[in-house]
Amino acid sequence: QVQLVESGGGSVQPGGSLKLSCTVLGRTFSGSRMGWLRETPGKEYELVAAISWDTGVTAYATSVRGRFTISRDSAKNAIDLQMDTLKSEDTGVYYCAASDVASGKFTSWGQGTQVTVTS
Image (cartoon, rainbow, N blue to C red; front, side, top):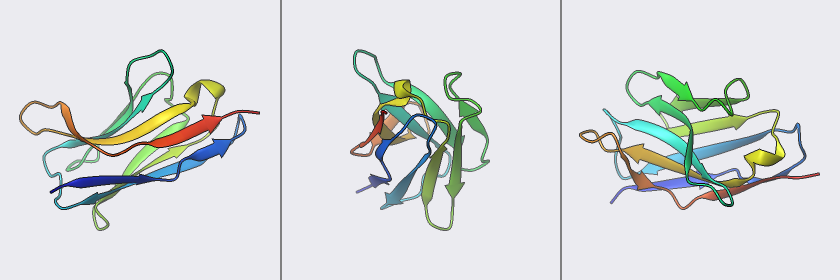
């Protein structure tokens, strides 16, 4: 059974930084994309960053481009999300997810970690 375990959330002031980590237990996701999605009050889930597990090619939402960096550590079977210059609108629950190889949809999710940006 696959598990995605997030860590690293917390509270930070605007302009600060946080690093989220996601450890994949039970299998590897070769052929899949790994992503960080966030849920913010009153909004649908937003895919903020994604990375190809095999190639390392990345993609970012416009709202975070230049501030967030997604990376993978194949040896540790993990992905990270470095978040810099955080804004209040980045507040939300962040989920690590893996896509299904056939459909491309994010079908495996972690439990989520809270990120709060407030002064």
